[in-house]
Length: 286
Length: 129
Image 1: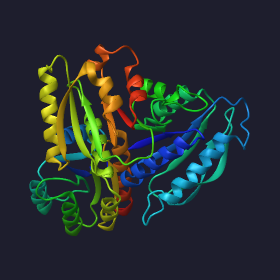
Image 2: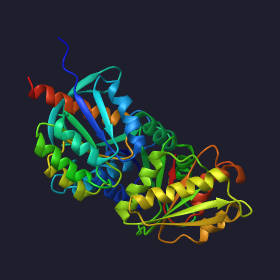
Image 3: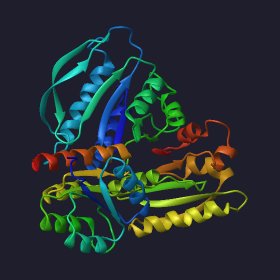
């Protein structure tokens, strides 16, 4: 699994780092810690984003340092690395023993920088933090979390605050559910020892047959894998209220797809809207 | 003389995983057998030698950890790659103590598994001279 941690220098990013460490040490993911911002031609070594990335790298390596850690930096070797204008320089680098932790900075607008990095690295998951409650912003670039959640090609885990996750509420409003997204929920349920609750979205008390069938299949899938699973139905028109008021120590998991009922019921950019309404962390799956 | 085709077993109780992996590995020139029942796979390794085994961990009947142990006991030079949807630090450590070549959490990209298989194949070929 390839995880991209997109961060700035504020405390919510440090909170989100805890989630990525937990996920990475359990799944042996390839990890990239990144930041992006327009800085001009030269980046000052004391730039706060660079200092934050260095601190996150130190914390990551220290906290993941268990016996047999895949990230232990033991592997020194010379590598040719591109610098600028076609110039390469041979540098001595130290790679992780079995998995690597890349640290990179993009001289770009944060949203386009994060999305480009995720695309180029073929990331499975972007993790980023944001402010608590209904704000859901980055301090120096407010729209970043919602824009990344809306526009990313891969799944996004938005960590709102440091809190235990005891339930994963997976909201199903369409029949197309990728195997990758089911597996992503498996991993998060395993790591948090969380119960999965499938929330089927209905319209005037009805659900499309294929969506209902898929809901049952997914319930069976998790039961077969000894994950505690429960099911409930919620009206699509009440979903915003449900998201805003009923979620406490929960992770809200939303599937985003072309056949989504939410997509038809709510205006454009509904994902970002629900994410900001939700008081807890959100996993947007693609 | 062309190098001998390496034989790979894929064991996962989810047919979709076998269905994805088989063509992706055959395309790279490996000979691939897939199994969704671990007991059946266990019988198979008793009378057939695989160079590489890719196995899931959580399965009904014989689980992946026991399968890995049996496979390494029967033929230590077989390289085993574990794929799991329920990864924990403990299962990763236990897999390595039992001699696994690599540990990959689901979801994974095909390119990721192809890369790990290529590394295992390179090790096997280097050892066989």
